Image (cartoon, rainbow, N blue to C red; front, side, top):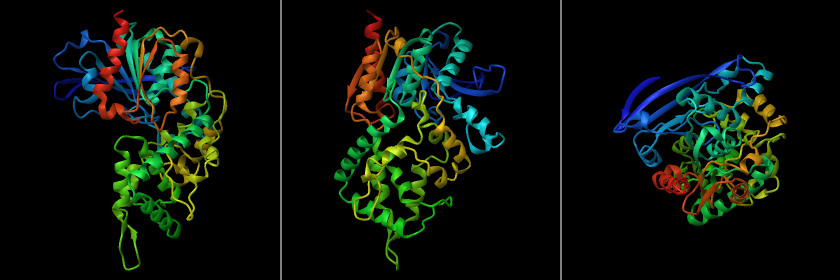
Length: 429
């Protein structure tokens, strides 16, 4: 453990753990998992219970806080907080092309297959025992972190005092194909709202798409900007302040020239900044496998897209943005994904995925769970969340249309305070 102090009023410590890549082979390859612990400077660390945070994703490192603010501020009132870099992210033996280059195809597939919620929870349990012994802790999961929470309650509920979920209640049984069929419908609704709110946006998007069809446009990293890559910017329609950011990008996209309007270099740089698939390859590689239980996804979003022709751009109809879905062509168009194309296909066609959840255990779950469920969430189908709520004992849901998927980031103090209050009322009975 290494102590640090860099936030006003907050003490921190860094932890690094050597853990098995494959828990079925504990003496085999080990990886390093990093976690940052924080606690209020005016409180005695040893007297505080611990709350571990499961980040959204998959494939993103934990929050790097710049201040005591938002949900973290509320949590530090009564917890010490453990910000866990899930395996393969942040400082936890990160996944990238160079790191996998020494492995053959079979080894790469096995390696990546160990990076789902099941092993993230195994890591958390190993870390809990090292830090706390047999004492349980509390858990908070945002988005994909909510998947991890339900996995935790399925297999290791004895390690948890109370649980919180924000924007991340998945179906326990539905496959990726069903998930993305519902998601396309939600993305279509967000598109209609976006173009109604910003009347100039449709003409701008259509002109940009037509330009990309007529010209070979290169991004600053040398990759070609295609219409389908441009459409991926729709992922921002599912987060608060995302629609504004997308519109402001569009409004400065075109510049006058002697040959007509051309694309602004500022726009091209903005496209790269707003699409981080190059820097977070695990997101693309495992985005569909996080749903798989005994079945291959086979690029589910790509297959289902054919049922929604409005997302296939043609000059005679308005452009529609897509959402968080991943597609096989992304491994050709994103420079950081190109070396991983065979691995992405292997993961998409892998069918022997083990179960993630135990519905029988969740039906008798003894741990108090409070969840913020965003009824207008573009990324998580509300109807599927309701199905799961009905199947998990001791789960109380706060349903609200006030927030988009990133509510915890935008108004975290209020959201976590509300959820803690919901759990406390039951714990004090």
